[in-house]
Amino acid sequence: MLSGYWHFTPEVLVVCGAFAALFGGYLPGKDRGAAYAAAGAAALAAAIVAFGGTGGPIVFGQLEPDSVARYARTGLAGLTAVWVLWVAGRGMPGERRREGVALALFATAGGMLLSMAEDLIVMFVTLELATMPAYVLMGYRRKDVSGLKRALDYFVDSILASVIVLYGLSFLYGISGSTAFSGLELEGSGMLGFVAVMLTLVGLFAKVSAAPLRHWTLDANAKAAPVSLAFVSTVPRVAGIVVMSRLILAIAASAPAIGILVGVAAAASMIAGNCAALSQGDLRRLLICSGIAHLGYLMMALAAGTETGYGAAVFYAVAYAVPSMGVMLVVAEEGVAIGDFARLASRRPWVAWSMVLWLLSLIGIPPLAGFFGKLYLIGAALQAELMALVLLAILATLLSAAYYFRIVREMFFGDEDEQVGGAIEPSHAATVALALCAVATVAIGIGAPRLIAALGVRFG
Amino acid sequence: MAVGPSAFMGVAAVLFSLGLYGVLTRKNAVMVLMSLELMTVAACLNMVTVSRFVTPAEMTGQVFAVFAMAVFAAQIGIGLALVLAVYRQTGSIELSSKKAT
Image (tube, rainbow over all chains, first blue to last red; front, top):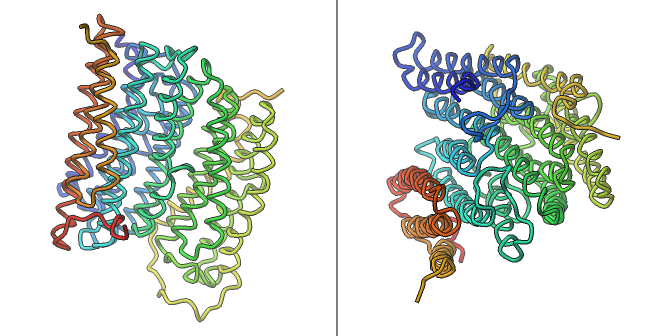
């Protein structure tokens, strides 16, 4: 049984990196050195997962490092490495770096374990490990009263979602008599099964901020520091999406009706997210709203309830998070109002062109990551003959181009007078972090056919 | 009279509903945290009930409940820290999201 334990090497490395960051006062370079050490640990962990092998179930079948988990773990560790590298260059606003970096790495370790979870207990514990540091990161500035208040609201709502998930899981366990995903059996459970699935899904949707309970994320996140938001809206969220997809696939085997629930939530997320994003002037709010819409596209594939839909959804989770992290980090550098981006192209041409790349990927223009991601999502939905959802997704994508291109227009043709922020000092670490995001956006796009084959997606 | 699983699950459902009511109506952050704890207890009671009546030999539910309690102890720790941080700045522990109602 101990033979599979080497699969945990990356997680151990990430936790070691977190401790190294915590005790950064003893490292050369102090605070900044701590962040570099943590970024190195996360990057090494990503490389080990990417080039390491996959395997069958380990630890009594509670975790399974399969190819889907490998893809998700590489993405999570890589995203964290990029974020920490950026923080090493620019710092956390108003506070020192090392606690924030350590918390981010703990969340990443939780997220990486979460994407391997094959058991309800492991899933719940790691889900909390992945999201708990987010509450602290949201209220990271001690002097910022409104930020702290929002963090407290965010905390209460997120815990409420956790408790609802927990209550739902207790019913799922009660009906099937087992906590393993493979042992979930809802056939003929009637009303109790419906209640169990509803509670679990509503809680999980709230955790990853999908449609029915999405308002709280928007209100609570809108005042947070953009750099915290760049982490909170990508890494823990991707991990949550991966495990949600896994659980939906496991439930769909014995209760196909779950597809209707997921489909309705998908449609609601697409409509609500895109409509809300259209009128936002604050880029944080715009990106959160569009994140809800992207989750809608993703759940469209989950509504199919097939292996193909599952693989496509996990692929899209990372393919969406990479450009979204890039955009959020630039927002953290430039400012949160859309006017702050005026004439970015003449001030910092490379950053402006990277922004264009990320926004095009978010819209879904070939050959970038977002295009292939959406292609596979639509393919999976078409296989299950969900025509209405596919049409809605295409319309929503066209609509999304409107607000993404507003940012592009501001960067290239904006009114120079509006620009209030001064020039920011150059930082090599931050530049490298942004460049990595841009390269990854293209690389995921180019490597998409190979990646998706490894994720078990089959068309035709 | 034998007490079956439905009695325990009924108590759990009542506890859960009371907690949910508290979370949705209270403005005081500490009261909200206590209501959340009540909901957790309900979920744990549910698990232990299931474990006792469905899989008595395996104790899975008890283990699940112990893990859930440990996790929530940590959560409430973070919550109280946030409440304290807000209290130091503003001298109030009311939740801002419910000011309007």
